Figure 1 (cartoon, rainbow, N blue to C red):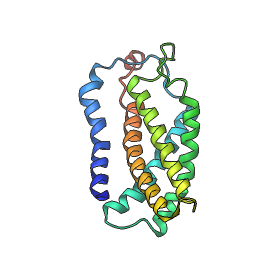
Figure 2: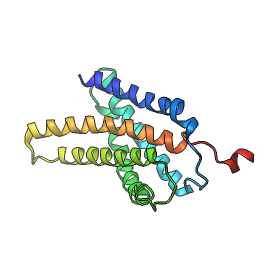
Figure 3: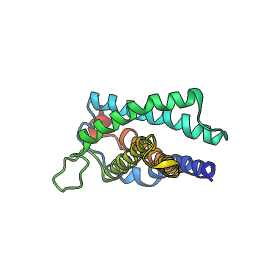
Length: 181
């Protein structure tokens, strides 16, 4: 069941940006503001790298029919710290620009804002389920439930992060100033 859902989730993560590019990008107008500062680009690149490493080390093992162990577990846990820190910093940096208030800065499109908040919520769920699953407070049955929550929230995180990364980095049209240069 998990292997099937993982395959479906990865296909959705690939399909969403393609659908957005084909249907919605041509009608989207460009933003005239500068999108990301250098430090934001660096943090976002580290975030996407950490998500990619964790996805390959966990979902890659599921797709080949094995459990995550040895070096893949070390790789997964090493990237987890980078993921948690960069997600937290990006959430603090972009929370105001990603709000849906009328006077919010026109830095992000509504689709990017929705994908951002879904990424933050799925990331928080993934982090909490992993941290609480390491505690013995819940017993064996509780830890199994937390592991399932961790897997499914991580799969949804992968879908949202891929879509947000596409929208933020590739899915916006060029501004007129960049097109004429």
